[in-house]
Length: 271
Length: 271
Image (cartoon, rainbow over all chains, first blue to last red; front, top):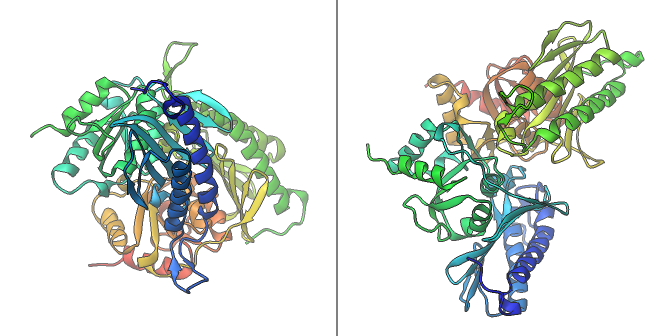
């Protein structure tokens, strides 16, 4: 649910515009590191450093500084630089979600920016600066902004598991045993499975291209920025036990309520 | 080895320029189908049709017509529309390599155009029209052309398996038993494994971002267009038994000769 626009500080349009500013700033920081060497000598102290970590930290610093300047009362939870408590609103940040994509040159990583009003996600953003695609969602709607053109996103109307395109970032993300078995059950009934993609998979679910994304071991910063992108497109995302997604855990994102329930049933089936 | 430039018909620069024309034409045909619905009513006869197949066929038809007009003596091998024998040169075409990427909205599919002089690959191209990236290779060099800017490609100098980033399109491409076991052995010694990516993985190997691509079950049209892209960047590609890659089969692409030999040793180890 969107907060009421009662003051400039709680005006949702202003907060979305601000999220766009944050992504503009982080993209400028991150892009020069993409497809640079993956392990490079640090000229200052002779040690090796990891560009993906450098880009991640530098981008988070830039985003946090901007938030602290414009909205000093807001809380911040960042992957790299920790948490700062706030009053009503909290920003949840992952400047580079998809480290494996990033270090293999694949443009499927993204910058995740989520905003909670109390405990409710109200703005979500996934920004891919290399392809110049930005996915933005609120409770009202989700859009893809690509090179200045906005396209309304609508998740698919696939309701049958045997028609569903299922995706996950990597088979190894599921713990051997019940968790891996549950994913394997779903895989065996889905139309196809695609591995690899990180946050981009959830964006493609919002865009109607993927029907199910099922993952495990997610942190709040891996998912909070994606909740509104998915829900604003008509999709549904919860944990495997049906709880709210934004705190993290094991995720089921589906194109619609019907497919979501069918996926939950398969994941939670007791044989 | 590049053919000598003895006549306009065998001038390598002219053939590269012609391959660029072919990719320009195919990209225009394919792009409108990308992220369109994946199963759409055909208005003419009420049946469902599959946009990826439609795009694939239409693009191959456009490419073949252009080859037949300009180089009527050249042979053609295409994924969708079969083979036509020729005299000295043969074009090997896969308008959409990476069907799974295409139908899930991920911009990792590509148009593969390879040219053989006799049985020797002399031009290779992977074109990704959505990201506007074109990877072109000859025996002399490989380049990425992105929005008018050409960048010389150089594969990585990683020679240690435990530093190598390994990639493959999908775990299911390896037949259970010896083939899957061989890949698992390599996976267990590599720094990391990334699944998902099709032809884009080989392009990222040429770009120095991925160190090893190991796959199985490849057809000639899946790989012939990539051989010169890899070799022109200093990479090495053969089958698992060290034979030429362009006819297809099980592939080992490596960033350099040292790493290639180490990967072959692990794949072919008898326990």
